[in-house]
Image (cartoon, rainbow, N blue to C red; front, side, top):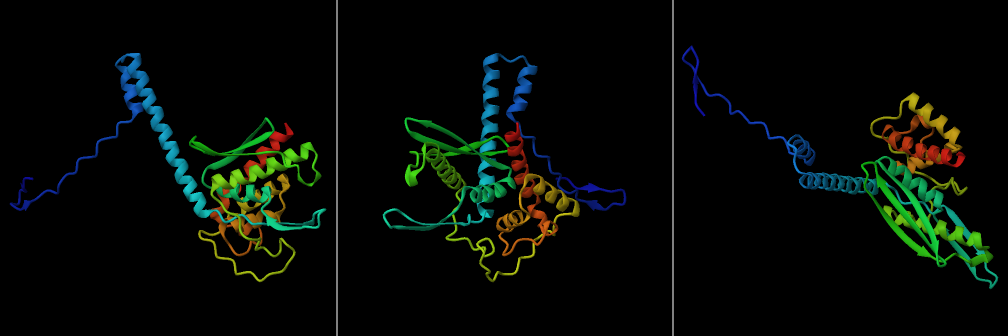
Length: 276
């Protein structure tokens, strides 16, 4: 580095000039150059395959990162349904479990905030029912969890009820399995069970609450979709890990709006599919 002398005789040492980092060469750039130069089809096909591999790997990494954020944010699924009955032999069946609606709502709400969604596929062959839960990311990558079981013949079910019971069971556990979400020991929400319990004060949400326009839009969409206000606000509280639900749509944290919007869009899409 050479010193420069100004007209006044003062010696000035110029600062070191940093060269800009060279632009990263992507497979798509190579493909464009190959087309311009009239490269042979075999080489061009290899470049296209390389670009596709790179896109698939980037999508896979995005899926993994989104699932990591989802699992860190998603609360345990509440065991909100109590089953109690006496069998013909006199044995008492008494347990709590998470209904499929509770599992799907809790997980779907949190997945939506990370650009994730899930769906099921099912088939029945040779007396066995197979249910596959597929979790997809908006960038295109998806992975699945699969379980098999026979129709549930317990409790005097007819053939259709036996299949429906097994499908519901497998849907619940394939979704919880691939999501990596556990069920809580028991529902802690006293109001949902009809029991008044002391609850901690709600944590103050970071970033404020939704705008009045957003609150009105969410309320209108819930009413149109037939989602009770109390259930929706309870879902928001569980997702945000707050002690108590927001008192109204206007009190929903701004950070929960994306998840709210995605969850309602999924409900609206399902309703449109059933209507058609």
